[in-house]
Length: 136
Image (cartoon, rainbow, N blue to C red; front, top):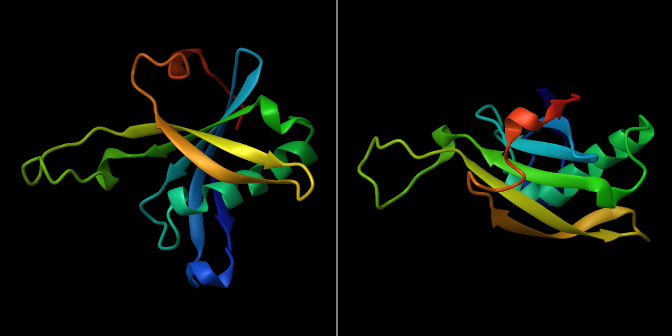
């Protein structure tokens, strides 16, 4: 896993933001997993998803990995250590969460916007992680 560090606009606070980023190849698509990390003291990956995805995409384009934003699938991952369920007893373990993030691509501004999340279940065709080929 690579660590992606970025300074977000001031309205998000002055903390440094650190996210985990992994890139996989699966059925001729790039899958980019954005991980929330315990060391991130800044904005959550959820609240910064469009900015982080845009920044990561620029790097993928610059390195020749992709030229079309439409061939990238974005997934957000929160490890179980971040999960809290008020309906569970204190100390109960809650599973990791994996969500598909769908963005609108603004071709004029060359950035992602308007993220929508859809939970991915274990039977999702996007989650046979054993079939993913890790690139970064």
